[in-house]
Image (cartoon, rainbow, N blue to C red; front, side):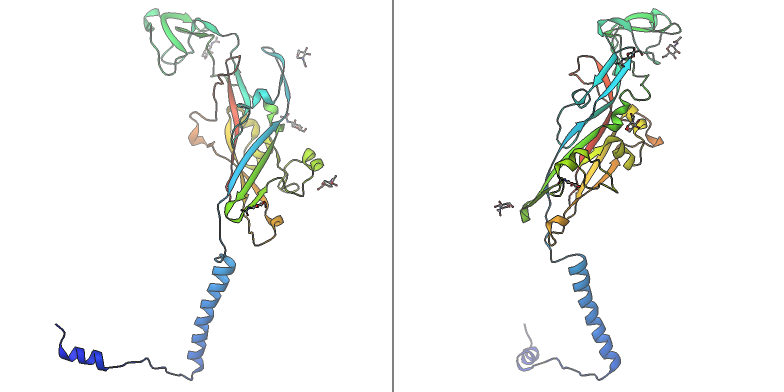
Length: 316
Ligand SMILES: *[C@@H]1O[C@H](CO)[C@@H](O)[C@H](O)[C@H]1NC(C)=O
Ligand SMILES: *[C@@H]1O[C@H](CO)[C@@H](O)[C@H](O)[C@H]1NC(C)=O
Ligand SMILES: *[C@@H]1O[C@H](CO)[C@@H](O)[C@H](O)[C@H]1NC(C)=O
Ligand SMILES: *[C@@H]1O[C@H](CO)[C@@H](O)[C@H](O)[C@H]1NC(C)=O
Ligand SMILES: *[C@@H]1O[C@H](CO)[C@@H](O)[C@H](O)[C@H]1NC(C)=O
């Protein structure tokens, strides 16, 4: 219930704000100062610096790569062998990444049969009783037959039924078998499209002609827009040593940054390349370092240990 007095004052009263004019230099200056500060914030920071008036868009992008380089190895086991792109890039074409083989463990002439297992604390044996017929663990190369046979002149290991001889990954070739991969080059083709602005561009800039493209190698100082990179340089730019990394492999990222202000001419929209190593190489990560796999497609059962430049692209 509304009291009579309250209703009366609500209906029959009128109020208005009163303007006070203060003729004071100090108050006037403070007032203008506050107005100026707000104006400076809106125009200077929000508009000019943060570009609050602009629209932004995320980018649609594709990356394709082409590796080039040949090398010759001449070893007692393989003889003189030429390695070209088809041999060391596996698989031939991948989306946004490329895999380059830099080291190989060769296990020649494998066939199914019986042979000694690699020695470790589970497989070393003195007498037949140490070995269990049918035993197999996740690290086994085959299935134990129950015999204890000489591995070399000093130790004996349990015999396995396996692809023999079993692969010995204790001894990794050092320096890396394909150490000359340092000088291989990779051509990176990156196309981008901002759907909202219908703006597209590629990293082979309109100013680049085919003569230049045939001969250039990326260099942050002299050729910052050349899309051809030397593998050794990619690793070096990330502060790593290629020959060291080539032994056990690693994962490299090549970042292509397009930070474009489309208020300016399209020629100002250029890519910026940066490099980093993604797998950890410090002393805290010594267990299972690098990157490796066994290619099933190879006619020889081999284990390459890889250098794997992964192409990431962050586009702003
Ligand atoms: C490979 O090495 C052997 C012995 O060192 C040599 O006779 C042969 O010419 C070499 N082959 C090539 C293609 O260099
Ligand atoms: C036998 O193999 C073991 C393990 O690989 C090694 O430590 C040892 O030196 C080898 N002995 C000979 C005589 O090769
Ligand atoms: C790469 O090429 C340079 C110059 O051509 C050469 O000096 C260097 O030995 C090469 N690196 C390897 C690992 O072959
Ligand atoms: C987008 O741009 C291309 C070429 O710049 C033009 O041919 C096409 O018509 C444009 N599409 C739209 C929807 O504006
Ligand atoms: C190609 O570009 C290079 C450097 O940008 C320039 O020196 C050369 O004259 C150009 N060649 C042609 C055929 O335009």
